[in-house]
Amino acid sequence: MIEVKKISKSFDGFKAVNDVTVTITERNVFGLVGTNGAGKSTVLRMIAGVYKPDAGTITIDESPVFDNMETKKKLFFIADEPYFFANATAADMQKYYASIYEEFDVEQFYRYLSHFELDKRRKINTYSKGMKKQLALLLGISAKTKYLLCDETFDGLDPVMRQGVKSIFADEIERRGLTPIIASHNLRELEDICDHVGLLHKGGVLLSKDLEEMKCNIQKVQCVFRDPEEEKKAMAALHIIKDERRGSLHTFTVRGNREQVMEMLEKTDTVFCEVLPLSLEEIFISETEVVGYDVKKLILG
Image (cartoon, rainbow, N blue to C red; front, side):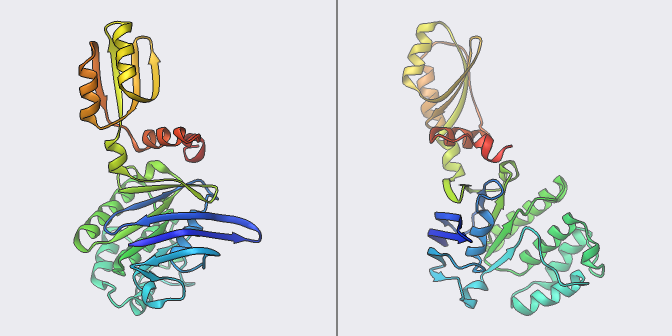
């Protein structure tokens, strides 16, 4: 488990991270979402032990990470722009990381390299941005660390490659308990992979919640009521966060689990009624609007 408690970090008087607290549980994919400048990269670098927090604490499996080589062996950090040695090949980088990480799986690395059609003898400086991202990910996965910190991991990957990486993550989580922490400015990229998402805004955590919990406790309902009295009855019974109307059709976003919501609606006379799944984007829009923010402006452009 990674525990981040009240960490802050400033650079030349600018507070990049302000009083951030998050808990990252094992065998889960944690998504750290926010616009450029929200503090995602700084938080990841502090978790990786690259930066020391000005205030607060970070522990990995109950041990501090900064200046602690034993703890750092449990993690692999992939920066937004991965660093490779000048004129190095994929084979050169494999040898380097295998000398640092004792459990580096050489056989697996070359198997993945072949699967992604990356030439082990080709100079990395001739790779495209997406190919460099793929190589960094394959090195990180093959290092066999418990935690994998990824800064804008999917940026530059085409949809096919993105799904390939997600499949590898799922397999590694199942087989050996890998815990990926993924920072991204794009909420949609994390829709189908994350178990828990934290939303950073202006250096602080605006929201940090388990996705299954959020999905179970917020519903989208479309319905047409038989008459205005039935409409009033339903609106009084439901915990409505948002109500959009198109003619007689209501689209409600409501609190409560599916069974509770359907039970309440069954007590009203409707012409048409159905409960629809919400996207991660819709959930975050609803959650952040409640606390006075518009997530569409923050991370959806």
